[in-house]
Every structure is written in structure tokens, then in C-alpha cells.
Length: 234
Image 1 (cartoon, rainbow, N blue to C red):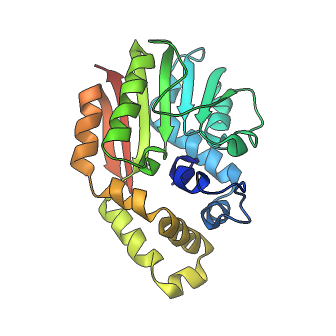
Image 2: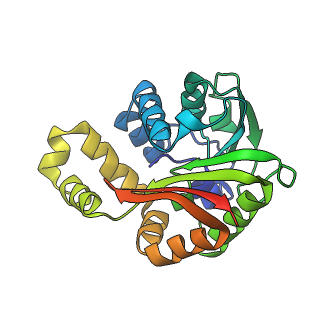
């Protein structure tokens, strides 16, 4: 449940004050949920599971919804050198300290040429899109446009598996939240992203059908509350 600024667009349009973790309860909960180092380690394990060990180290890789860049750090540690991160938030991009190039941009209008990238990675950003199916279709169209013919899209997003249903159930229990700071942080994040989160979780067929319309699946699974998808452009 790694959020960039896409789910805050409507709020920012109505406020002159910049958001910070001290004023944004979602951001404060996110920082309590998991340390940066733990998140980087998680991303490394996840990317290796999805085939990163077989990707060319000189591949031109873009991470969408990169936020503060922990996914980019994970890719750097694996050994990739041509990295670009894209996010809508200048505030989050400024927090990144690494060798990747960071670009202020919208996933629905990517600032890259046709068939110019080898890999586009999305980890926990699509479920913050404001409008489904329109925003998702546009994001997938742009992703397909910039990928080379033999390129790959890698997607990891929350999915309403039995495990996630259980996590939701226990995270709503006051006593569980009292004894587990992580559960309390999760419940807080769900509360403040509820509209887009529930919009995403309640439309699994729409999402998977749209993904398969734009990309031919190479690897796909639904486990431990996540949808893992690797595909090539059609």
C-alpha cells in the first residue's frame, strides 16, 4: 500500500499549503507502518521473485508512482543502472537520494518516446487512481506505448484474497490495533484512502481483463493479498 501523490490530487487542488507527514494522517501512518530499509528489502525480494535476476543489468527501467524512491533503491542494490522514477509529487521526489533520474510526471501522460523503455514497474500505485476504468486504461495505454516490443510491465497491487480479508478484519479490531502499531498504521491508511482502495478491490475482473487487453501475461499470481503480474505489450 505504497502511495504516491495521485490519491491527493483533489485535496491539493483545494489547498495552498503543502502537505507533510505532520499534517497528513495517511503519510504519518505510512511512516509508522514500515521502515525505509524494511521496505527496500521487501522490494528486493519481490522483484527477484518476479524475475529481476534474469533482467539485463543495462535495461532501461522506469518505476511509476516511485514516491520517495525506495523501489529505485531496491533496483540499484540488485545492480540496475539505467533507472528513472516518475511521480506526481515534487515533495516526495525531493526525498530520494540515489543515482536514478527522477521525473515529475503523470502516469497517464508519460514523458517518454514510443518504444523507448525495456521495463516499467508499478508497485502499489494503480489502486490510488481516481477514476476506474478510465485512468487505468490510459495508464496501461501509455505503458504499452513506451515499452519496446520485447519489453515488460511488472505490476504488484493489493488484491482481495482470503488473507487480505483476514488482515482487514483483524485491523479493524480496537484491541488488535492497541497491541500492534503496524495494524494500527494499516487501519489508518485504509481509512484515509478508502474510496480509491475499495474502488480497486471491488473490480477484479475489470482490472485483470484490462491488463490482459494491453499485455500478454507472462507471469501472474494472486497470493498473500497481492496481485503479481508480468506481461509484454500486445
